[in-house]
Length: 522
Image (cartoon, rainbow, N blue to C red; front, side, top):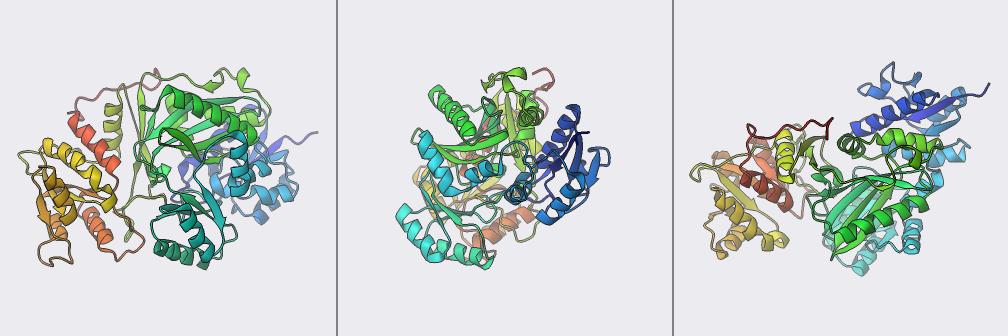
């Protein structure tokens, strides 16, 4: 009798960058396979997940997700194949090893996964498909990194390959940043190369798609509030996109479809894009589940993991009842807002960047983008403070490259009734635009009366602090942001997030007058 067993790899211990979303995908995959009549064994070693509940799979192997342990289970089960696409990067990183052992990988092949991860192979594929991407190279040494960064021109993005959550990823603005980064990375004795890309500050988008090898279904395009440079897991994501032209949407659909098929995807694929100078560039493609799959599944009503599992097992998308191409645009907005645990993580800089720091997320759904954003932000714990006679203050301390955008943002908060405070360069910039502002000294400028004593005074409701630095816990800007967290003062570290907050306050919405949306009827 034929063995009808399939092994599903979980995500291992949950950590920042790889959380409950991959457990959701693993469980949904198990349920879909059981519905198709297969026996399912799951390998995972996290007792806090649904995938390790005794009644989720037919058999649970509570083992580490290492090549040796997984192979021990495979020798015992002798399965039809192994599913790795729903366990995040931990599971995906095992595909090359399992493939060498002759284990059948169900869905996207190990070679296709490597095609998406290998810089040179992926660049060749994009060139062949006519897909633009930021200039980039791979390096192994500090000397190679410095030469590459100078050639590409600063700022550049540095990151290791084969990681999730933007782990050890930075934006380098100077050769000193590159030297510091490479020293840290090389101490870890990396096996895979470091990737160096030209950093382009533009609008960031992402899509999740389902591919059967012939056709692609794209449930929706998500647009980030924050510009590129902040990890997608830490960005506020809005579905559907609200400011993308129809011409660019068509290009996104066409390029995503071409890329999914060229990668040989069988199942889920996540693709991230940026728009720069009104043109589309690809950031990366991952032929696996992503952290946005549960969110997009819920707000579109498309059971993405189930459909992807059926596609992996040979079914065609056209027979699944949801069509192909881009799914219909809804008559509502759904906003995903990240949640952070900085008050529990000592010495961590709250400034957001390419390395993921959020520990969860919430969802706001409403007929308008502003209301959905308001719902999401209050659910994430962001306080909506409406000033009374300028008793509440807002403190600005942003980096030099953000100063041109500061007056317009400061004006919005001033018109809302906030008293404005700013460190020297910030206050001068705001003052030159004709807006009253109180100058505040940094700690090294005045030991007795400065930004820290101002935070202790109880006058500040919000802090807007952006910084080019954040890897040194002794830096004054890091200590300042930590102090705001410890005083329970809302500290926003991206101008786009601050603008979104201003929009919410300007809307006049309160928790008492927001609408209730029945997600089962939208």
